[in-house]
Image (tube, rainbow, N blue to C red; front, side, top):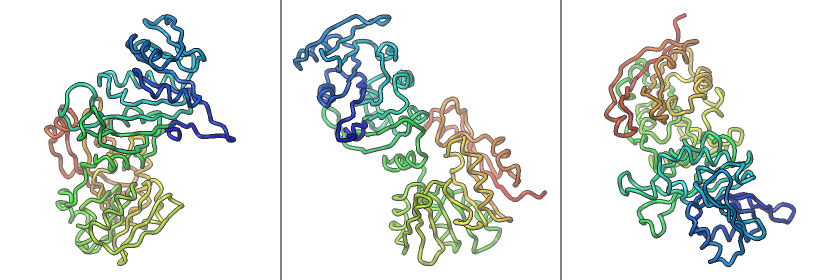
Length: 419
């Protein structure tokens, strides 16, 4: 716990933190953190819980009304332990007179109404110092397995809430402890100030079993448009971005092609080679903070690193690209850089098939992210011609999975410009 909330020792002495414990109740964590020498602030809406906390722990306290907010401030005699008895969403930095560099959030997020989550996070953000650490424990269970508190929340939802201002790192997933059901899961996250690392996000998705896009069978549009991609050749060099351990890799390999992929999560790549019983070697590549996995025959190679760490020299010119959903998975702001690097990797006579979804992104932000056709045409306009191979109405799927009113699947073919 000390390491996660940044209580490391400096010059042999403990660092004192300003720690916020939202929706704290009568938690013993408050006493523990106070005993470690930190300044601890809790927020609890029920007056009785606040008075009982101090009396049960034999802590002398004073009580004063809050100004501008309905509630009271309970303070220990040394001033290092304070409980704000009020609505947490009413807290401001002015009321608490400090900014917090650590948050200890043990299932507070899942105890509030889901419709209040964004306001909860906005309130938290207003109370945080620029350099902060945040330990979050949540509950997750199957949809409709339980109604009411605690409200299940997925990693993806946590990322959407906190990812714009913090680096969200998945730590562990454990069976829920009593009084919750053992088949439920407790997810533990550590967050620090800054922007989330791209690879960490996908690592957590794989680790928590949220990799529903993965299949060990070849994708239907790869099989359907294989001739478009190969142009009749029986030995093409394929590139599969953000490939995971997709069945597309082995399908192309067994067809006699040379396959290069990139996947940000190393354990997924290692699983792929082991599960398919491929004779391979693993090479450390510190210059890209990753690894290179390749078969002994050289026809299958996957780089385990951030896509944007690749260089054209590493991949070499490729004949064909099958983009199963990489461009629509990455952050919207990364799309121009993604296409620019792709332009350097593809050969002069390349063939490229791209999968994309279109939908109303005011209702769902992905992934898969909305990728409008106008944006696709504009991204590749400088060096390629883009045509639509087919479209399919996926509104039923969009409604079931993402609560969307409409959704369209678009398959593109991209080829060198004739200019």
